[in-house]
Image 1 (cartoon, rainbow, N blue to C red):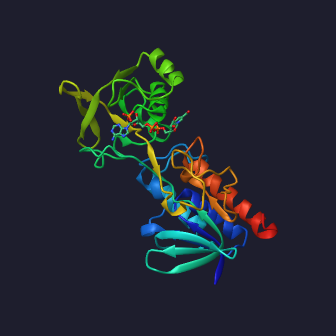
Image 2: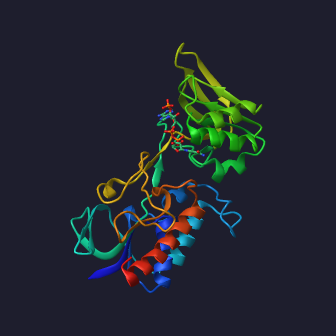
Image 3: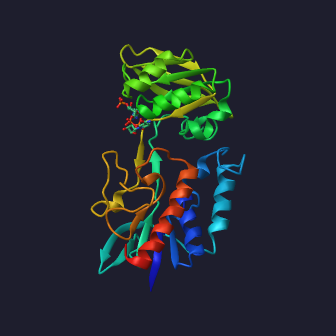
Length: 305
Ligand code: NAP
């Protein structure tokens, strides 16, 4: 049997693609790793920036997405190990040795935030530790927070949070920031952002929620603790593109080069969500990507282009 579309990834982008595939009456299959629906979103304690849903836990929203998408596609648990295009048909190889055939493929396997790997990080994720200021910043109004990192993401997160929080500590492992000069100039103008350089974060502490951050100075070893309600970790992301090596062009940061229509350089192969090269990685843009991919796929199946 040959599917019209196989969607790898059961996060917001993949589920949106599944919903739209169902509406387009395509024979669709979603492959979810570990049978986890919602992907990154389930780790978000509260989502308040999804249009029409002022407040929901990530878990609730993920379940709503799945409920809405079910019926539009078949779902199977599995891990995609490789994709090959032979005689105009994609062969998707799974880790259990099975193979699935499809006329088109949407890869929506996302990207994962790099973790500091320090004590307290995992325990307090969703309870003060966040990887997205735009998603969670509003919960820290008039509070003191820390941002870890020195690249553009950390700087833009710090700037964003400085408009909400009373104080933002920008904690970086080097004495100089890596982010763009334009961001650095803006940071310098902000009275409520304090740069802490040469700082190696040792632990995130709290009880039910985060209360403090412990770090030491790389040069002299001095240990310090700052009282914060939130720690935003912005030390880069890793897109999950291993299965696309050789069949899709990847940019210098590891993201797949594709426009809003999701088309990659291999015809019939599409990408949606955080794996795609783009400016804003949010739930709402992932959902939009999934819908756009199916529109492109309908055109591809009808015209071959
Ligand atoms: P990035 O540029 O790779 O910076 C990551 C930062 O995290 C670096 O400062 C790095 O420190 C630090 N870091 C990495 N691992 C760490 C660890 N284990 N412990 C402590 N610190 C660690 O990543 P990014 O900021 O996410 O940016 C990714 C790309 O997106 C960049 O090209 C950036 O320009 C772009 N971007 C652009 C915009 C914009 O233009 N509006 C906004 C956001 C991102 P070191 O400096 O010591 O390596």
